[in-house]
Every structure is written in structure tokens, then in C-alpha cells.
Length: 151
Length: 207
Figure 1: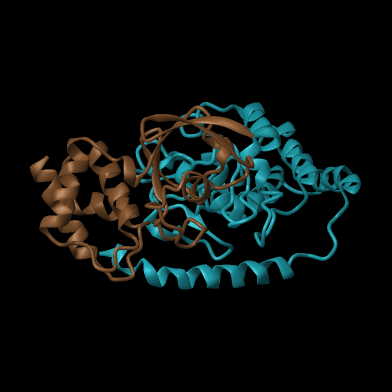
Figure 2 (figure 1 turned 90 degrees about the horizontal axis):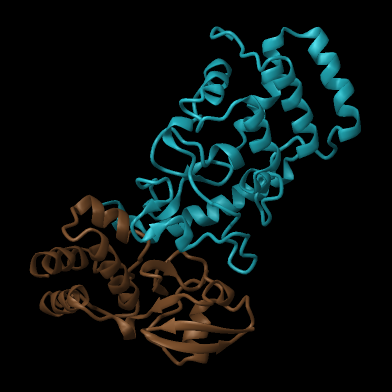
């Protein structure tokens, strides 16, 4: 199935089986390997990307769902909020092994885009679907507050 | 900090699958055939107080496939054991989930047979005013019929909702290891219409 998807701001022709998960279109077809495979069952959040500006699990979104829509991956994040998150992540040295962090950052930016000054409760609700095996949760929470205060 | 417990939440997934499997095995091996249903309902109508016509409807509304998305709080439920939705998923302002945990972040308009994530058109949580869990038959009946709570549905609209809405119908064909609603949908609709045709009587509060 041929389709056109705007990926990281660029209109991109994609020819994939319509049931192919978006994750594998990104990684295998387009070589955008910043988005990670974790569980394949919407349980871990490692594959989080933005679809029309909203965080989704790319392992559950199928190629046919994306025709004519906008996808943003970790490679394409830009703007003040994304920069503030990047700076906060560096300042607080959030990352440990790093595998989950593209998904964590996509969710953090998604949260701050909609709630610029989130409470701890907002962060709990918005970030619970992103699992971190290194348990960097305390630093992630602090970095989201840091980004919120600096953006 | 509930989200610190996210990783151990994989355990309930396994438990839910096990429970779901057991639930499926516990399904009755033989259902009343749809053809015999009108006779049975007519007989019940003649023999029972009219309020009892709601009993089979209530039984369906209490099935996990229905009740899991009709909570009286902000947490959707999962599985036949009706545990709170993993990942701290909550209602959100529009019954479609909170930021980053929108229903559509994972649920599509059909089941995902590769990952096991269920899906149907317009996947969402029923409004808080349509919360059912814990209600007795009388309160369940009056809540169901209350147009100020049910989105302005009269009895005919309620019947149509339960007869034709794709998300409701999913409950009878949920796929995977999920236990389908019983009785079969045609039989339930016969029971529902028997209740509706009798004036949609509700049981007394004491019942």
C-alpha cells in the first residue's frame, strides 16, 4: 500500500503492508532508529512518537492509520519545549542506560505541549505508560519540572 | 508515586491472561438457542413481576466486557477480574484518557491480533454519569433510563445503542482470551425488547 506521511516535517512516500506497525516503518523502512522497540504490546512506552501532535505507541499504530497524517519522532523534535526538555535532561543527567529515553522524552514533550506547568499528579498520569528499567523516574520527574520552569 | 510500580505491573498482565483463560473455560458449554428465546421470555413475562424483566438485562450490563468501561470512578478496568487499567490510565476530561494516555494511543478501531490490544470503533470510557459498578438492580435500571445521565437516550435509543453500536457489539466478539458477553446477542436483544415493550419497568429499591 502506497501512502504519503509527513514525517518530521517532510512529506514522505511509504510503501508498506497496511498492517505494518508504524514502529517498523520508521525503523526498517526509513532507518529512523531513535524510536525503540520494547514490548510490542503497548506496555512499555519505548516506541512513543507523536501522531498529529499526540503521543501514541508506534507499535500499535498501523501503517494504514498514518496516510496523510503527521508523525514526529525523536529525530524530529524541535522548538522551545523540546529544547527545554533536552537541556533539563542534560542538566540533571537523567539518562542511565538510555534505551527508554526517546520514549520518555516524546512523552515529556507531549505533556508539556498540553500542560506547560504540570503538577506531580499530572506527571504521574502522563508518564506512567513509559517504563524505565533503570528507574530514573525521580530524575525524569525533576527534569520535567525543570523544563517547565525554564521554557 | 504509582508510576514507580509500573514495571511490576507486568505481573498483573500475566495474571489477567490466566484469569481470562480460566473465565473462558468456565463458559457454559451450551447456550439457549436464539430460536427458543422469545418463548422463554414470553413465559417469564407472564409469570414474573414486570420488574423482573430487567434482571437478564442487568446481568449483561454487569458483564466485565460492559462494566469495565462503565466505572463509577476515573479508572477504566481490565480483565474478567476487573482490575484497574494498567499504566495508571485515567478518564481524562472527555472520557478519552489523559495526556499521553489517550485511548487512541494504543486502541484502534479493531482488535490488534498481533499484540493482543483490543479495539473497536469509538473506543472510550462511558461518562461518569453512566457509572454502574456496585449498583443494585433498581439503581442500575433507573440510572440506565435517566436521560439526564445517559446522554438523552429514550428507551428506543437505549435499545438501538445496545443492538447496533459497534463498541457495544464488540463485547460479544471480544477476540483473544477475553470472555464474550452471554447470552448470545440475539437472545439478549429479545430480552431487552421484552423489557422495553413492557414499559421498561424497574425493580423496586428493596429488591
